[in-house]
Length: 200
Image 1 (cartoon, rainbow, N blue to C red):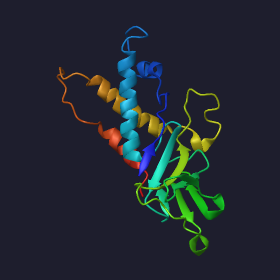
Image 2 (image 1 turned 90 degrees about the horizontal axis):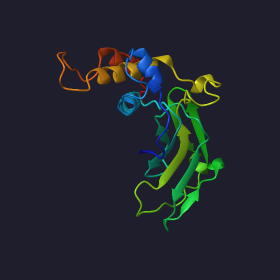
Image 3 (image 1 turned 180 degrees about the vertical axis):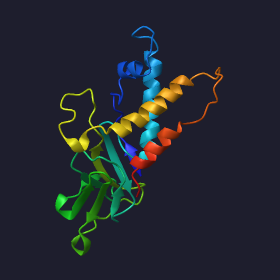
């Protein structure tokens, strides 16, 4: 079970860039809050569909036991920390020598415990999902210093375009008083997100 521990403050597409791309003709601060909400909602929709994390975010993956753990989140930004709740409900950190992380930069990660040599510490029987893997994931915030220094963590133009398409569509159809037929998402968004989706 994936738990999102932080909510990024940044935006994949800045409000100013969004307004420029849709040729917004109002005042600089006009509709700023509405546009920001639309961009965040479009980003969340894209992340849910593709399993990609668009901005740096802290996560925790929770599991019921010591089986191999598949983490379908990309890109991974940090080292992993594996902790567990012991029978007394006290959090313990598992020694890194007891497990291995295999990261695929475009597919997520797999945590494997060291087979027959793994001591398999006793776990809490009163806590749901007592094994926890903590890590950070997400592409660089384009507004932050150093963004783009690591190609693996650079924003992909296809991701940004898909989010823009959906946000622009929702912005154009944000009221029901429209003579245009309203569809849930533009076809281009589905095609781009399907191409960038992480399967597994």
